[in-house]
Image 1 (tube, one colour):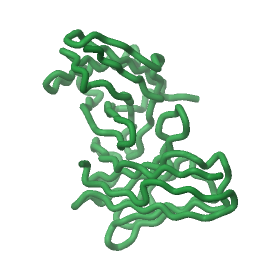
Image 2: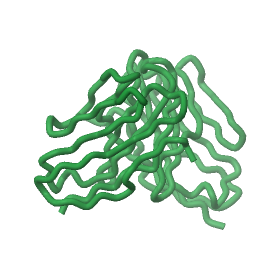
Image 3: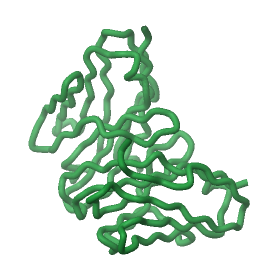
Image 4: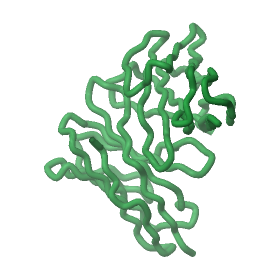
Amino acid sequence: DQQVKQNSPSLSVQEGRISILNCDYTNSMFDYFLWYKKYPAEGPTFLISISSIKDKNEDGRFTVFLNKSAKHLSLHIVPSQPGDSAVYFCAASAWGTGNLIFGKGTKLSVKP
Amino acid sequence: DSGVTQTPKHLITATGQRVTLRCSPRSGDLSVYWYQQSLDQGLQFLIHYYNGEERAKGNILERFSAQQFPDLHSELNLSSLELGDSALYFCASSVASGGERDIQYFGAGTRLSVL
């Protein structure tokens, strides 16, 4: 049973436009959410996180939104750049546990 | 560069063999996590060590084991290898003991191919 779901395996966006990556979760015990970016042949790189006490966190071009009632979070990238092309993983953890539960990832392609 | 070092980068071995994957955490990090990523899958948590002690286990097979040494590096041992064990194995490290809202930093991974 997948506790963290990224239903879009891929997304293609034009340079300069907004990229919106979505993530749904089922476990109501999750209270911390992270987004990682992964390039081929590299490990995941931390992008941005949000705790369950917030509904929005912003860092430069990246904003994460959390809707607890819908058990949904999204990552917005504005403006999108070709260097943002990568696989994006959504991850979650529950208080008292350190391990992360990952979605399967969304491959973002930003076209010039 | 995340500061987490994994060796080797690639491993090719045969079924039934045993291999050891090594991870050196970031300076100052006491927690080490191991994850497995099979083809087209997300990362699956295997095991967590904090300051030499096992803290949590995920879906880790009995043929797999790990340990964290006094210098905080960790090794993941995979034995009686099967074709299905072919995957990317990632190590991550963090400061906290687990449970706190903490960021994990990942190494570049070891790609294991079992032929």
